[in-house]
Image 1 (tube, rainbow over the protein chains, first blue to last red):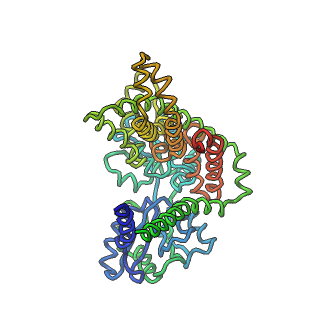
Image 2: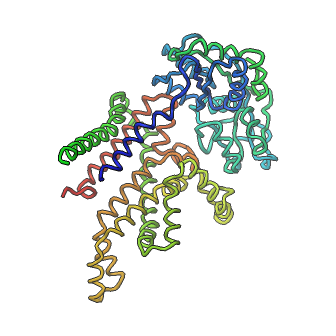
Image 3: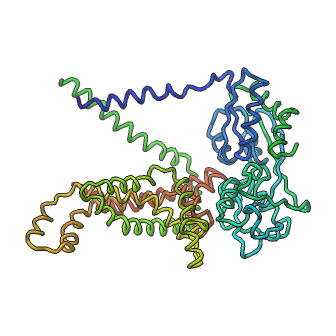
Amino acid sequence: MKSGPLLLLLAVLVALPGCTAGAEASTRVRVFAASSLTASFTALAAAFREVEPELELELHFAGTPTLVLQIREGAPVDVFASADETNMDRLAAQGRLREPPLVFARNRLAIVTAPGNPRGVRGLADLAREDLVVVLAGPEVPAGRYARQLLRQAGVEPRSRSDEASVQAVVNRVALGEADAGIAYVTDLRAAGARVEAIPIADGATILARYPVALLEAGSNPEGGRAFIAFLRSERGQAILAEHGFLSP
Amino acid sequence: MRASGRGLDLVRRALVLVAVAFLLLPLLGLLGRAPWGEVLAAVRRPEVVEALLLSLRCSLAATALAALLGLPLAFWLAGPGSLTRQLVRILVTLPMVLPPVVSGVALLLAFGRNGLVGGFLVESFGFGLPFTSWGVIVAECYVALPFFVLTAEGGLRARDRRPEEAAATLGARPVTIVARITLPALLPTLSAALLVSWARALGEFGATITFAGNLAGSTRTMPLAVYAALETGPETAIALSLVLVAVSAGILVLMRKHWFPIR
């Protein structure tokens, strides 16, 4: 029979959607979070399940601008945790937020080098050295914008051999030895462990990343979303964030 | 039997319509949301012109490199079946299957500063591929090469060998046979192979950004520029995408007689 393969194809197409049935909309809380929150939010979700066992938390991580794009295009999301206030304000201006955003954590930046700091990077001024390959996140990425502000504050003209798409890509460039130094969040460097070395930035120049969280209009479970935001700001939530290197708001 | 034949014919027609709609709708989405004023302005912006020219230069160079390396390989692969050929064919197919980002990391581990041969390159010639346009060409060639080789090999296998055999019995040298008979007969296949590998190179994103980096002027090709623009505002990204679509479609239209001859 010639129609055999065709019928098989149709059968597969009909069967496919059955594999992807998710949680019920009434108990599901869908959360979009900046990629720098991956480790901490995964731990937070585990703790949240103990507190609210009937709610099913669904986490999605990506770069903040990507998440903003998906929300603008109508993604049904209850809660959005952004890595900066600029992107959150953009959503607020478009009337996408159900309630005003609240800052739930802050993050510091550090210089990242190979383990043992073989090129002797001591501070931000060294990032101007011609003999070093320096990479930063692109200016459209929150971490890249903060890094540039930080360098300008220290009187160093920012230069980057490559505008990386995420702060994680900056860490990987240095970890693979392709770049000598970069700037990333303290929390990312903690997560990267022994693959890289973090050089703290002197207190004179400190830019703190502020992470706002908000309840979205597009979500179908505002009660569940509110519960998660409350948990984020609770003592237990803040303790988990602190374990991952975040500062309290 | 007759009725089921007509039923199948209807299904076939419906699937053709669905396929065309599936390919057309995303394009219509772009066109519908396009900020038309911005598209015209975008074409004239120096950084867009820079990215577009870089994209064209690198993708054409990558295609040329893929053809140079790929044609002899395709000839060899089209030879009599053997275990070595089977293994090499799997090797050739791998970059098509690998997520491009993984290809980028793999290229770094081979040609990066600390890579298998990259360290040697830097020490001997003081030259590293990452963060240079050469890196873009290498990344694009790596992902485009399989498309060239497999398309060309398919054509080589399917070709009519009788003219070659006739020429051989008449005493033509092997080089003459390849140049005068094999290659001219393969022209449509080779054009198709060049076309698909060029198209793949032009749209390359993951391996390029991972291996070569992303810097305006040296490594930021159009797909990377679109991605960067997506972060700041989808409208700019759509405008840039349309520029890329228009340029590629324009080239395809210009070359259609050559690539898709109407028989």
